[in-house]
Image (cartoon, rainbow, N blue to C red):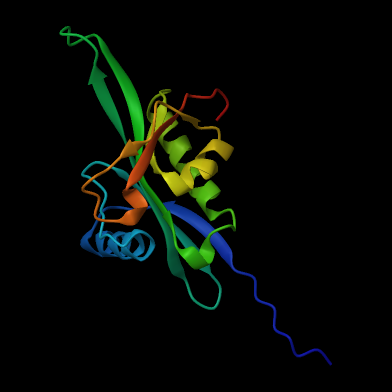
Length: 166
């Protein structure tokens, strides 16, 4: 008789109202992944990725926002970009497709607001992930001299234009 127990967990992504509790959870996941207690900015879309099974845990967080950029002195001459500020998946949960699910949900939410290019300043070790997800590198990597975390010492600007049907 085989006494092996098999357990399958599910992963769900949700956007939640910003509160002191969700801020605390966001900071905890960010700190566990990056070593820094980072937080979403005011007005950001905030996503939480949870596993469920024996217990429910937040194992991934992300935040993003839209930003108008004025390209001349004329206030009507503007462009809109979306930014994904952070996307973190706890180490023990990486390589399960959770980052892809988080990113896809964030893209859909941002593109629902407006059909604009999404930008991200990616940590160098995450560049292959974003390339796989359709992002392209823009310019040369940026060396961050005063970065508190080794994860953020080298950043690469990447972008993905709006895609119809997304």
